[in-house]
Image (cartoon, rainbow, N blue to C red):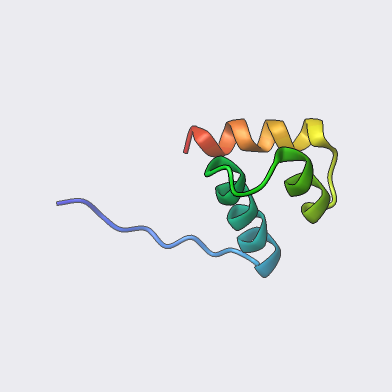
Length: 54
């Protein structure tokens, strides 16, 4: 039997995950995603790589 875990996230973290998901699904460019979050494109690429490994 697998155990379910709950992860507590702030509104900012939820928004960031949603933007990363949209970029992963090609609904946003990395440039647009970085601008929405307020970070550099390079940092956004790093976040996206980590997001893909989840």
